[in-house]
Structure formats: structure tokens, C-alpha cells
Length: 105
Length: 105
Length: 105
Length: 105
Image 1 (cartoon, helix red, strand yellow):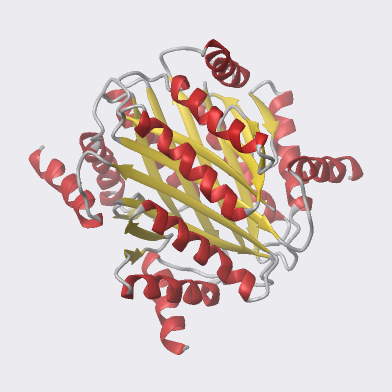
Image 2 (cartoon, helix red, strand yellow):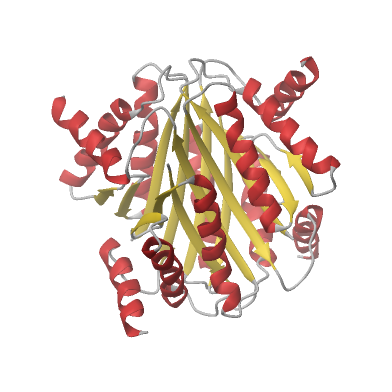
């Protein structure tokens, strides 16, 4: 299981607001979550997704296609992958582990 | 007010776990928050910070110094800035705005 | 054709130097280039790759696997995708276009 | 000396082409280079800059301001910092070191 954060930036939108695109990106995420393939979390800056890496690449590509489907000609997508294979971790474990460290000091 | 997300990756840590560094990074954030200069949020992949851009750069630099202070020789830090100046937005507004779009559809 | 830049950061390497991993990542790139599937360029900060998006995701995943194959337990990979579909562009066109703009001013 | 790569994405540009903004960003870089404060390199995906970290943050902020000065209301800037303090490295050393590793194998 890897965790990724993804930001999809539609370019040439005419307006500084891009929330309409984000709503359709959300539908992609919901579909994959309902199929039990990923878990995800919206944050003020990006979407964080947990799942098997090949599935995550599939989801990221589907998210990246959304603004093109809506008629835009350019999309800039930025992705960070954090992939740790010596132990199983869920998204919430990472924040918890940091909070424990903080309290332990 | 801009919003940024920041990931500090210590390189050459000997172990795949880096949560001890993150705890000290957290102390930096807490100090700036107590001074009323920023608001922040820990996520499973990064730290999201809201504040005036020059202050944010100062905070990011302080976060980036933490692993060096702990004896490491290399740090890779990754930053995304989202800066919108036609209206005031807080971190939580961005997620809310997307949720409204989703429900409105 | 999309263009991406990719940084693969092995975590827990014991040493701040990671160039041995980069050399094996290079072999992955060379294989795909010889098959005529991508064009790429090494820079001091990342690898820039040009190709069809599904192929690029395949290449990125292969690059990301390299440090695991060498025994590491954690890899952080960072990717930016720039995908423009209203016209064909090659990597070198983007820099040229900027240089023209600069001279034209 | 640290090395960074920077991508400035103007949002709400009306057109998918953003090269006019990049040209003005270039002027910022040239000014700092002429003052001997940085060295830089344009690539098809980003600008790579070498210099002292506090100077780099100053340059990045100046680059990020360019689209606002041209009337845009939103800018998304993405930055990767690679900072290694156990030895002096120049931008070109990083690529050379990888090429040596490749030939040595």
C-alpha cells in the first residue's frame, strides 16, 4: 500500500476559480472508493489517496483526464508518492505516529 | 494570505522511519502558530500552512533546517504554493467550496 | 504527448549520496528510449521525460521500483505532469518558445 | 549552496499558453545572476537554480510575483529543494556524478 498526494491544476480556465473541475475529480475518487480499491481524503491543497500503487496510477490518470473531458487543453498535475514496504501503514497511522512522537518528547 | 503544502524528507537517515524529525518540525509550526502568524494542519502526506507569503517562506526555511540541526547532511523539501489574491480564503474554505460544488451537482 | 519531470528519493540510505540508485534508474530510461517509446533528459534535479501519458506512468513506476529492488524499504517519488493537447510540442520546443519570447521583448 | 527546481503556473490565463509569463520570470533570474547571487538553467519543465538558500527563497518569491504583476489573480508555484551540506556541489556536478556511476557499471 502506498500513499500519494495529488494536485490537478487546469490551465487556461479563464477564471482563477477551479472548484468546478475539482467536483468532477471527486466523482472519480468516489467511484474507486466504492469499489473498495482506494481510501482518500480531501485537504485544502490536494487529495491524499491510499491504495496499491498500480491502482493509484490508474486513479491519478483518471483524475488528470477530468479537465480535458470538460474542454480544457492543458492540465498540470503534481504527485508525491510515499511508498514504504517494511510495514503496513494506513493514512491515519502516519499522523498518529507523529503525534505520539510529539507527546513523547 | 497564501496556502502551502510542505514535505520535508531527510536523506541518509539509516532507517526508513523519519517520524522523529517530523516531531521537531512540528515544534517550529507550533511556535509560529502561537505567535499568531500562521495556521496549519498536519496531513498523512504533508503539512498545510496558511499565512502571509513572506512569513510562509520563513516557516518553510525553519522546517527545512530541522534535520540539519539533528545532524543530517541532506534534506529534500518539496513545496506547493497556492496563492489567490482576488479574494480572502481560509484553508477550510477551499474544501467547503468543493463540497458545495459536489452537492450542487 | 505529455512531458513529466520525476524525482526518485530513496529514504533510509545510510548515506546522503544516492547517485548509485540514479544510475539504475537511468537504465530503465535507456531501455524505454531504445524501444522508441520515450525521449528523456537528465537534469541536476530530476529526469524530464516525453511520451504518451500511459507509457510515462509505466516508466515512472519502473523508476520508482529501482531502490526497492536494491533492498531499500521506502521511496518517495515526486512527479509533475505538463500535458497540453491543443498542439504537438517536444521538450526542446518549450525552452525555445520561451527564448523567443525573451528575445522578442 | 542548495539547488532548487521551480515551476510557476499562472491560473486563469484564458489561454493554455503561458510562455509570456515565463519570459518575465526569466528577467528576474537574469538580474540575480548578473549580481552573482545565483546560477540557473532553464529546462522544458522548470527552472533549476543554485545559490545560498535564503537568496533562493528571495528569488522564488520574486518569480512567483511575476504573473500577479501582469494582472493575474492566482498563481500556483511548485518547488523542490535539494540541500546537501557535507560537500560543495554545483549543478553540473550532480549530472556528472550520475554519468560516472553509469559508465562505471
